[in-house]
Image (tube, rainbow, N blue to C red):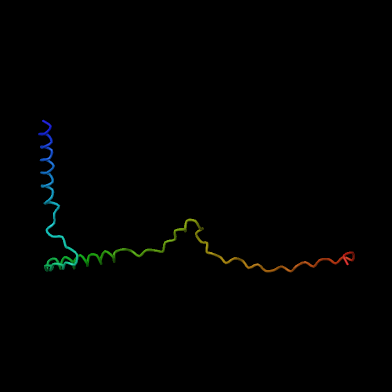
Length: 101
């Protein structure tokens, strides 16, 4: 009985593999350095239409404004300001003591 079940399982899996294989197979897979086939006029026209559609879709994309990823971390109207220049304050003269001399 086990042999019959195993044989049936092999038959089912082999049959499924044979059925699926032609669906997945392609007519021809281009190999390395193999020349391209000549395109038919219909295929060339389809390529031209696809190229024109691609260009139209690129033109339909609106222009993007510049992106500032840190914009939410800064106040809206703040611009980087130069650091204020520090001027040297005149030094205070030490009082002269008569006792120090």
